[in-house]
Image 1 (tube, rainbow, N blue to C red):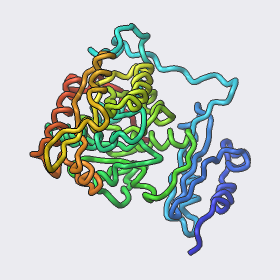
Image 2: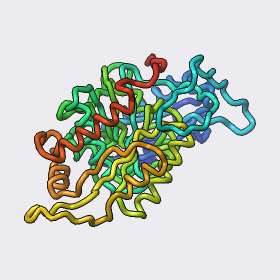
Image 3: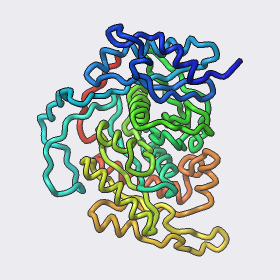
Image 4: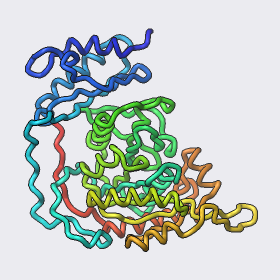
Amino acid sequence: MSDVTKEDVLAVLSKVRGPDLEGDIVSRGMVSDVFISDNKVYFSITVPSERAQELEPLRIAAERSVKAMPGVKGALVTLTADRKAGSSPPPRPQPPSSAGQSHGHASGHSHPPQREKAGVPGVGAIIAVASGKGGVGKSTTAVNLALGLQANGLRVGILDADIYGPSVPRLLKISGRPQQIENRIIKPMENYGLKAMSMGFLVDEETAMIWRGPMVQSALMQMLREVAWGELDVLVVDMPPGTGDAQLTMAQQVPLAGAVIVSTPQDLALIDARKGIAMFRKVEVPLLGIIENMSYFLAPDTGKRYDIFGHGGARGEAERIGVPFLGEVPLTIDIRERSDAGTPVVVSDPQGATAEIYRQIAAKVWAELGGRAPRQTPAIVFE
């Protein structure tokens, strides 16, 4: 069986009629970001934002056409809303009648009311775990934080929002592909009692994702809103490092209850962490606190402590900007080995000292949320 090519896909899509039956979606320049991995096809269709819901049948027709191609194992097609220059913007939703969301550690300045962001049915609080740079152990922290929240009696899920470098499948030792149920809704994968969704479940681990911003944004919203999460107290979002498209999409389109910042003690990591803090404050997402990861190293043979990356930098930063310091996580061989094996310390060594640290951090995060979701948001109805 020969591999499917981009040219094959475009040839089939050139037979799909455009909106109002005018031309086809290829000649009208509506198809972009065709990506093929293991004979699974991913692409987006750019449509006017005000017609996105109306043109859903167009997306379905394109998806069916590609799925029917010989050799195609599956297809994921998204609509990317695009407002042409000069066109009138869609009406802005009215702000909620109640006062804007407040938080004890948010900035003291007053802000105009935010427009309401659509929530996820059944999900209470959505929290982001973020860092200003890679290599600080953010994903390992996010997974153990989620498991810590669960160990404290909460119903928890985790969304891996790192499209380019998903880590959750390996950290949770989950393989295979998620099932699709009715109305294009995806059933999340699960292990250790955590419901999980990640781009890593949809493409092979060694596949290089080369999507542009609009495709990343659309994929994120699908993984968030078109997944059967069920009833959750908390959904932990493992954010990609930095302050790019994915972070802004989540911050601007999702009612985040708050953000947790992960940093190592060293000055270089803290410089980048400040950028993440500034971004969340700019979009008025409350900061739940800062975690100092790789805070210190205890030699397994002697028990002697070494501050390899310095010590106390994240605590000092938290005090400086007036947000909670959530705790110090040591740099240990045990965390690394168990993470690589897909057996996080919170579940594989629940009585250990490190697992206790994560549970304490989880308790502080839940306390910062007030023990509940900060406000009710409208439900999304899939039709």
